[in-house]
Length: 172
Image (cartoon, rainbow, N blue to C red; front, side, top):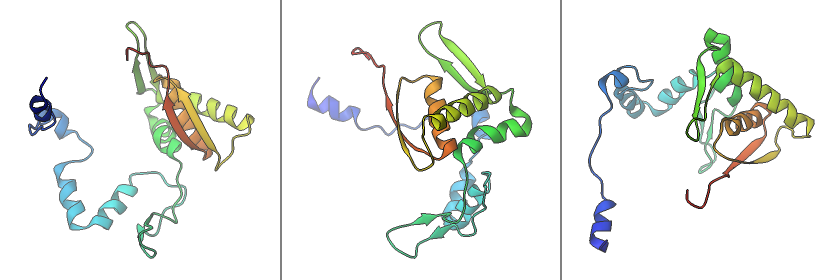
């Protein structure tokens, strides 16, 4: 392959519109871009209200010490709660939260209720191992549902996590 043809591969200008039915049911529409452009802080304050907060923020952006921006600094939320628990509480516990397709023939579906149970069990295991809020956890796992469970468990207890995806073969 010549350098010229490789350079051509790096320049892509085609656009692929989503199917109309998908676009009609999207969480964010083209209108959101206009709202964000017209009132950036108001837009993000509205988006923040879509989350469940333990403590509602009173200020969207604190820009008093540039370049250190602090978004929603007086608010508090739990990411794991927003990703899992609130869906169970809203009556969607039987809906599929994770549909996993692994090697041929290897598939699993975890509902929100099952995911909540697994995340709680993993969070309790981490707590028993001495992991606490503010600790750092490295997650070294392949791309399986338990990896998402481990990340959500860390978020549930307030431990920062870093993910290293393991298990890739040399051919992958």
